[in-house]
Length: 449
Image 1: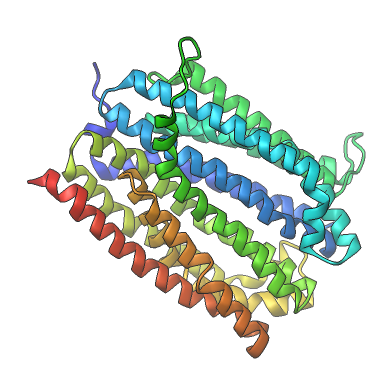
Image 2 (image 1 turned 120 degrees about the vertical axis):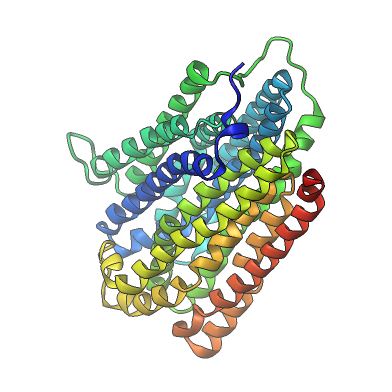
């Protein structure tokens, strides 16, 4: 039997070949989020603000989908490394049931509570209406995002990040094409406004899910869903969520953070909220390559941990961190040099530019710290510890960020709000590096002796 590339390919080349397709696919995903906002901003600043407010709910769905799939990916990679292929297939089947069940819960919540959630986000009746229209479509028809994420992680667990990229690009391209058609009413389609943006997103996610599941069926040589003779085991659920739940919590901090920051910024103006929505999507374009690097490290670390190859695990870490920092520095330079250009993509008015230009320059200096925190969390997840990801995310996006942002905004003004990111990112990176050092001593050093 041909040897698995995660056991024999030089680590630098392996991380590069696995992460580049992931980076490209995540960049495309980030790009269509940005394109979505660019088109919506042509409707009005109010529409842009509404999509920014709803993004916290969308982020929560992404958090649950990604966290569950990260736990599944770590478990599958470890079992493949141990050559327990039947057990890997059994866990993949359990993962499918978890994904579908979670999607049903979100769908029902969107059907029943979209209006109430919109009212909790803003007191403005017009904004509430736009938020409800956008949210109801994205949340009720959320099955695509869960199944797309699931299918991608099955491919990533066996080292096939190229096909994972293909499935995501299918959905992203469909969304980008459909956005102007459905928002503005082109080619005979009625002009649906923000509802059209939501419909385009849902269709793109659904097409991506179909592509991911079909590619797994045809091209995944090891892991398949097997319903015949399947027995649900709580042990598999526990193994998935032992790594996945901390990642869900970590990812969900982004949802909590965006919601809370929007409430803080609403005390200044709706334009400040619109800017923060723009910023969050712009910074995701910078952070997605780091997420791609980190996600590629999960199966590499997990496989070699299962195969008891400590040398390859250590080498993965030594390649991972400098690569992440280098990418982050590129993003920092772009934000420092071109803040006005980036904001003008979203039809920024004078007030939005006055808030946004200095803010982008201040926050951009934290990108290298954020990069190290992100890849550290994924690397630790590959070794079976999802807590590092969760705690690092909480330090980056909850405490001390939110209390400081509130204090700075209330007492020093909107211009100082963004310095809260400096404190939170430094705290997170110090914690993450110390935690990975502990994991290496505990789990990897014994494999080297």
